[in-house]
Length: 221
Image 1 (cartoon, rainbow, N blue to C red):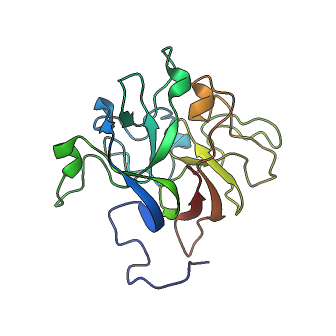
Image 2: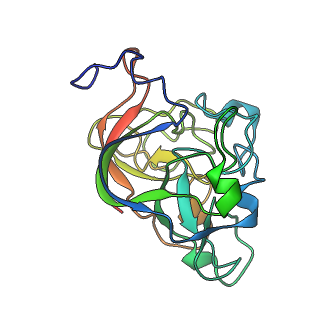
């Protein structure tokens, strides 16, 4: 089904993957990490059959709709994309919001991120639609039907949403049975970084379908 309202382009005419329906905070007081302009997409798990069907693999840097993380590995007041374990600060790599724009900009548009070194993100609750989210399990899940890497993820209204290792939205529990968990070190960024469980980024209101190619969710961070 589609959200209430009308749009001449069916909500797909924007160059941003993140659509702001109700927003509380647009935050731009953090400096982007160096790799926020150079990371590949996806940045961590790149096995061909696990790559989300919604990701433009030709774009470098953090992209619209991806998750902004604290990056203590690069200093204070730095945010960027996901980072893999490797330092004493791993447990402090946490999601703080969702990037509104693609850091390197888009063709034929201004590139304020490159000019300022900042990447605005939304935080403090709100309701959003996003065309960027994980469509496949990155690796084996735990419990339930135990999905393997590359298996389709099932999105269902009411799911908690967490950060994948690639820094994209991912369901905490797969909608196939409500038991199969993606919240493990093989799939989830925070658990990979020595944290017990992931921060709930939002609660899914509407999964993507043939009518509307975005997930709609109420944010919780």
